[in-house]
Image (tube, rainbow, N blue to C red; front, side, top):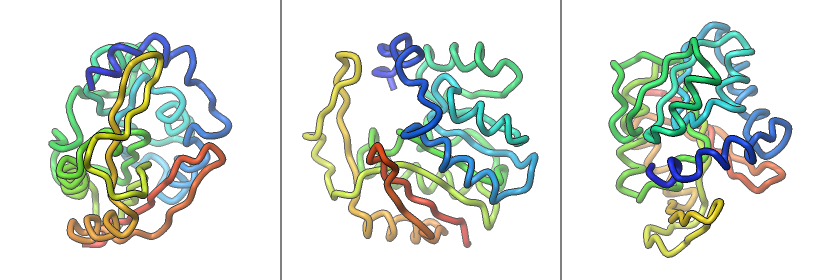
Amino acid sequence: MHEYDLIADWYASDRVDTTDGGGVPEVMALASSIHVGGRVLDIGCGNGVPLTKALLASGHRIVGLDSASNMLRRFRANCPHTPVVKGVVQACPFAADTFAAAIAWGVMFHLKQAEQVQAIASVSRVLNTGAPFLFTAGDVDDDSGDHVGTMNGVEFHYYSFAMDGYRSVLGDHGFTLVALHHDSSRNLYYVARKTA
């Protein structure tokens, strides 16, 4: 996303909380559910801090995917031995059945509903059967783009399905929704497992 290129410097200095609200506990729970050394796709990996670094510290092999060039430059500096690819989740540039898990923290709600459906289908294709998929998203059916927020003065539009909408889309693409919860910062986490 071009917007993340505009805020990359601010994001690197301001968004470094690794204890609460940053997804680390949820990502570590996912990491503990797969074999050590499993290959994890970090969708919207940004600069690699804190989630990629946490996964690497737990012994997993990570591949980052992001569309923002400035974020990717920082990722390469922060995680120099970790492969990272410029691309979009709606068309994951990887072979089928490549990953033991996938995470998408702070990604899905930037995509219109049709793009979210494409993203879920694309993630399903690259995951192994049984693999977990953790993502953050909203819980209100809204494809209007009228929900707008700002980060460091840059405007972002937000989109989502309601929870039942996500359950349906996930089911249509071989996933079962197994859990959802909020963290203390009100991020809503969906955990799905590829079952078909």
